[in-house]
Image (cartoon, rainbow, N blue to C red):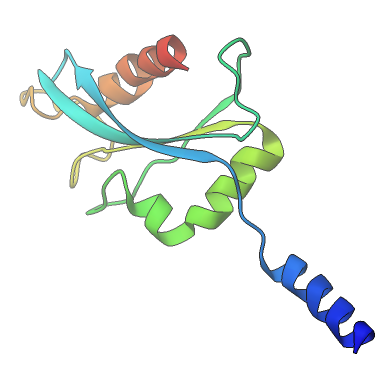
Length: 126
């Protein structure tokens, strides 16, 4: 009986593994596009405001949005954030922007947003 209980306890510990990374949906502002844009930010369990962390930006594909990565690979993303002690950011890039600045449409300036505005926002707030 004790052996069965011990084995069951070990198996349960192996199966039940929760990642403590914190997942936030943030609202950022783009001056270039004059609008608010959502992003998911994952911080490791070890996160401290007094420490600087590397940042990985996960960009969704055509037709996606800021929440796609967490819906598809949420546990892996949290595990990576905890294990590697990195911040992971998944911003919204519009339905079909390809992360470029459109030459005439001010509503589609995602290259500026991702490469400049969002990076600065993350550096300031994390």
